[in-house]
Length: 201
Length: 201
DNA sequence: ATTTATAGTGAGTATAAACTCAATGAGTGA
DNA sequence: TCACTCATTGAGTTTATACTCACTATAAAT
Image 1 (cartoon, rainbow over the protein chains, first blue to last red):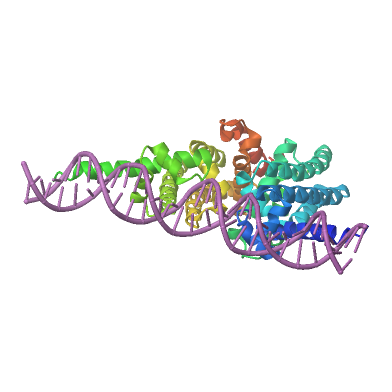
Image 2 (cartoon, chains in turn purple, blue, brown, cyan; image 1 turned 135 degrees about the horizontal axis):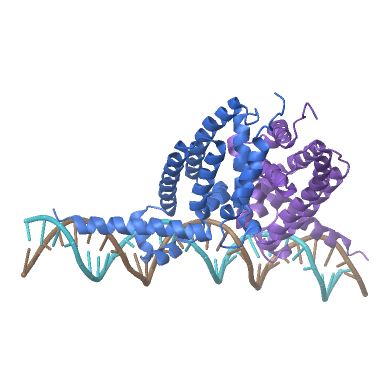
């Protein structure tokens, strides 16, 4: 069977559309008109609708891919960590890789379709899982304050998201906020959660 | 001069439009069509444009009012506080009052016109100012950990915003997240920033 | 009482963006 | 070579929403 060129062609176009959408959404947010995506991808406007029934379907497909990819990435990196410090370092590392898109996602999540919340949940639950196991251990050892784990987690994520959401305020247009503030974020947070060494005990 | 009825009438309509927009934006977000606002306010669609050149002008006017109002409210309440704990309690109290609108604001700020950032800045700088003076004092007294003040502030705001932004996840549709979590937020945060008492010193 | 000014109206216009579909032309199989 | 299939195209349609403006009703001024 020589029915290959076409299938490959079709898959390539689909891929090109998804990748371009990812890029364009990262740069300009999720409400860019579909015509822009088509132009950037170098395909006709109609081509998008030959591949996806609606723009929303394109978005959902894109988000699902993204959630899986970032989730897997986090999972791999988190597995080999022993301390909170290393875990959070890895977390920041992954966030930095996906920074522009991830920032848009958390920034516009409330005006995105419900499926976007799933993506968010996949990513967050992966981090939360590893966070919990590492921090539990440190609490037992007495190196981290005994506070509800979910609150420790929310404090961390809240702090990091705060910087991502206010990117414009914290850094120059193209600079990575994570890059610029990772050590400050990390040291502040660790300082807050660590038990001070009691001298006499 | 009897040129009153009309002026009053006009001002009332304007006020009605702004108040309705505030309510509708709070409930459905900032991208509700202007026709909905008109209908809810009980005025004709054209009436909106007799009062505001564009919908954007209505929004800016509304935001400016809101920023002033909430800023003033925070200022008054914050002045009489002595401890971080009380300051943060007051902060949460004010946030609770304006919760639905404020949540929309922080949630959609990145797709709102630049003027929205001013509103945000007014509100935040008021809180930051009072926060700094109270916390500085506590750091000197040794009751709060010696960490950069802006980091302590960002951690607090990050945590609170995290709950407001993920309202859907944290609480039922109409319930106030602040109401439900204020004590947990407060106790966690205080626990993190407070210096433990050294027994021998 | 008559004229003038103005707040308010809502059908109508302009525009932007999602989505359609008949036509095109290149790959496929006989 | 020729008929057929199918990915792609882009001009055209639909829909949604911001905004206009000629008109109405009524308060104010004479």
